[in-house]
Image 1 (cartoon, rainbow, N blue to C red):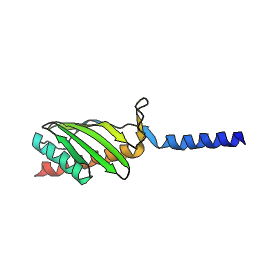
Image 2: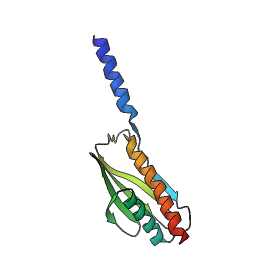
Image 3: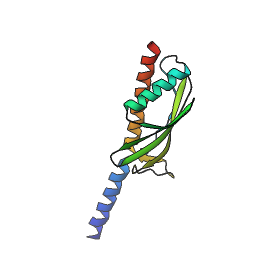
Image 4: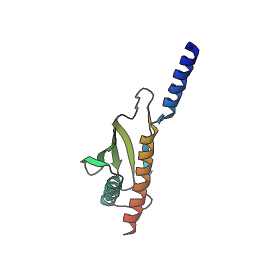
Length: 129
């Protein structure tokens, strides 16, 4: 009986661990076309809005944004120039973030990768105009 209980607990721990992955930070991502600083900002802002992120702070070269999805929350920092950008994790709630092992729920990484794709799409559209 004790053995079955221990096996069940171990299996549950493995399932829980499968949902976490190393935190993905988009580092030094280049825009697909040449942009001005204001076009870079416009591309990022439009992508954030489209993906339902809320901008909480903005300057000429940095944007802080957050998202609430059901009971989950994430906050990121985007540093950018006319050439490219970086997205860095700042904070989260209910996403199983573990600072010591730098892991987070896999959905966070998916959100960042989708945002990264959308920024590239918006930059390409802005760069064509």
